[in-house]
Each structure stands twice: as structure tokens, then as C-alpha cells.
Length: 118
Image (spheres, one colour):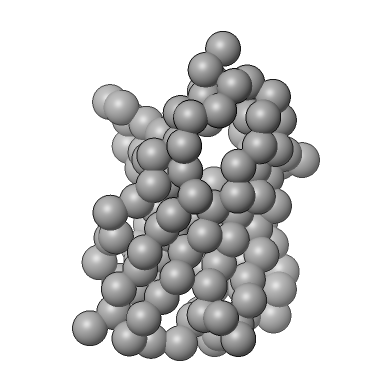
């Protein structure tokens, strides 16, 4: 059974930084395109960044230049470095393997809460 466990969230002031981690068990992430998603209260879950197996990355316009996605295949872990955080970044953040623009491969984990105060 595949499990994705997100961690690293917390409460931070605007302009601060956080580093999220996503550790997987039950499958290897190395050959998969991995994505970080977020869901704010009352909004749909959205893809904020993804990284292909070869290392190519894509970012939503709202986080471009502030967030960096990376992966460590030896640790079967994906990271999201978030800098210059804004209150509008407040959300629960999830990781998953991206299948298509709107589909993911695995069940969602519990996510990690990021709260940015102004």
C-alpha cells in the first residue's frame, strides 16, 4: 500500500520560509512526475509545482520565483522550499504523483498545514 506523508508545515510570518517534505513508502518515486498541491479553505485543490523524473520543473504563476521543488530519489522524498511566503499561500499542502493535469496516481495523504500571518 502506497503512503505519502507530508511534513514541515507551520505558522510563519509573511516574508518567511518553510521547507516541506513528502516521504513515500510502498512505491518508488524515482520514475514518477511528482507534484505539490495545495487547498485553501473554500477553494479547490490546485497544483503549485511539479518535477519530472529527469528533473524538469514547472510552477504555478502564483509561486514562480518563490517556491522550489526538488527530489532525492535515494531517500524517496520530494521537497518544496517556500520563500517570501504570503498570506495567500495559506493552505493545506499535499504531494502526489501527477498522472495528468487533473489526475493523480495515489490516495491523498493527510497533508501539512501552512499558515502565513500578515
